[in-house]
Image (tube, rainbow, N blue to C red; front, side, top):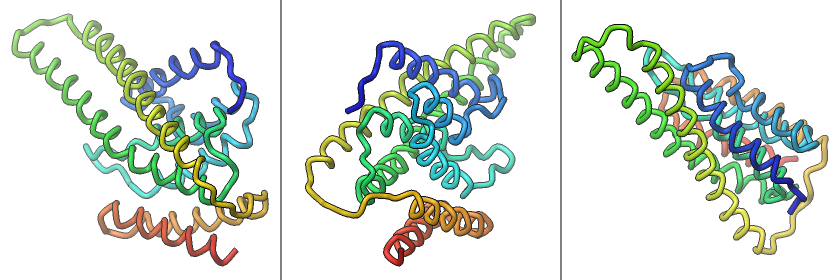
Length: 227
């Protein structure tokens, strides 16, 4: 496990709330994209290369969906946050199986995290309707402030609870002795290129997102085996 300071932990806690606000349209400056999230965490932990590698993967996974209308895309922000944090905290080793297991666990957790996204949006909608029904004019600033606060709390609680689950599972997996070739930079580059190309094509398939994720996973596994 890497040496970490209390200030880095405090940063992660505050940053998780900040990116949740951005994702829920409180800021909407796109800092919540996985590649940006992982890059910032990498800078703070002085290892931007490792952080960006995992961030890129979840950026590509996020490309599987095209948000249309009121559709809420799956929370790839959590993927970038949990993935980069787990790598830089020393819970994900540069082993093929280790990294694939981490991606699988985080991808599964993206579903309940997305449900929390929907839940907090429903809370905001309820507060607005209640204000309209009670005919409370001039209450907009208070509602906006409350919505931003709830989004921050949601990020701190949900993102970090998910991160702890990832760390626990990765600790268990690290005790299993499976020895595979380490991920050298050329292999990483080829994997990312192959993932991007397959993800870009999968984006336009009119099928359930779960099937897209399965197809993407199978494609990456096949490419890994070929390499």
